Length: 270
Ligand code: MLT
Image (cartoon, rainbow, N blue to C red; front, side, top):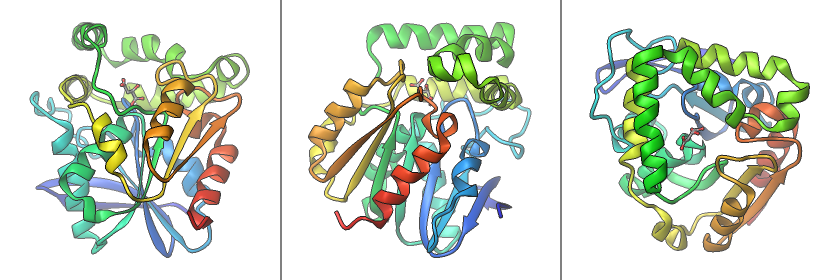
């Protein structure tokens, strides 16, 4: 059963979804979605584990309609996660992030490495944006301000989902569209700005001593398999799992396979 709770974090009401009981694992969501994207994993919370999926500032039903702070950084989002863990009395946890959630995990590691017991990096990368990537981000800020979240959904869904999902699982595309369209213009613009200014975390990989799982959808075109494999090679204690028939949102596209990779990792003694 999934529980939905609201707590005050850094002066803001923050929603988090929770399932199971035991060792904590924190699930950090992708852009421009919200904690609901983790429902398939929360539904399959492994025995002995407490899964916690918070909304990032600006996303999810608690988000105010007023624009989020325009100078938001990923460090701000990491500070929110730190404060949430403090509020919940959780000293350390497995930290798992998918795509933007992975960028926030890197920021949290810089801020509070003592919080981590293990790390899961799904469909993400350690590098900062390329110059072309930054150009595309600026265009997305213009797009959302001019045409709204629905236009962002139109542009992003064909990239977020793999070919198999696009061709055979229309319900996944509908779920993703609902989440994107529920985000405000201000939240989307602020998160794009935060990703655009994120630092390069690739030099940190070699210093990560906890066991790490790298998961990637075989059809991920945003953070492809080659990026995941290169991240895996640089992480001293890692395993890489490639999920067939999944794109960038691998946890939503092939939830059983994603949850199995996660559970195998949590139960392993790496
Ligand atoms: C995400 O899924 O969080 C985004 O695709 C990340 C990005 O745009 O870099």
